[in-house]
Image (tube, rainbow over all chains, first blue to last red; front, side):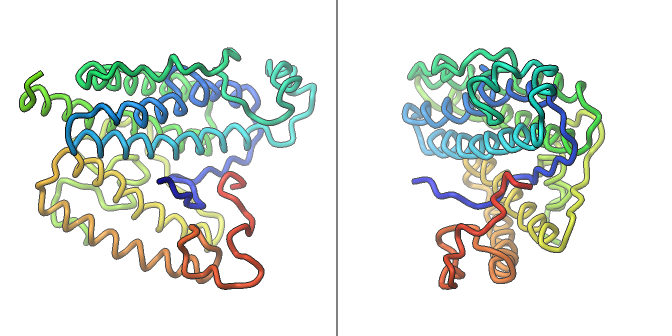
Length: 186
Length: 118
């Protein structure tokens, strides 16, 4: 059962409009290594985890990723506040305007729609955890790319936080995989 | 004061880094402070930092469920979080549908601002 808590995991307060950065951040909304994909991947994979450690870790990381979906969405919304049609056009967001007005939609930075193929579930917990470790590393790299594209501390603070969460999640998945390799008869 | 161990950052330092565990911290550029714009945002930041510490230690305990020191620490953080949550909900607005402050009129849950509104 999921319950909403009416706050962000980490506060988002962006004062300056930046449409190019809004478009770039879509990578982590509807992209292959984005937060939507991560949340759905772990919450879907948890059913095939073989013990209490795995069921709890995948549930809790999947739940935390839902917080990150909300953070990225808030960042895109705030970066797009008050944009004119001309500004959207200049930032390459005209097509987004045509289909979604000023609001966001789960696509990546190139406008490619989200697909359930990103959810990567095999039913084999070693394969899934190995894939999850790689996904966390890809997301970390994406956050580093994003961090080189802005100087705004209102954007860098949350990106730095989100990047570090990828580091921590990678380590926990790795520890769980190593525990299973040692203790389970695969 | 919350850490009987040197292994962890204090809650605020861990929160702004996105990692409570000193040995796992792997930074990229500077650490960014949170700059709350008013008293409400400041109180919410205290809540955020205790909640974050619980999330991060919770993930550790999922994989290492027999660490008594960490279970104790989790419960200390939970007590601190509860005090701040009660004060925040009393002074400002309810943060969950389980809140003790939903007996006000009009219905307190739908009060602005919503989290994405900054």
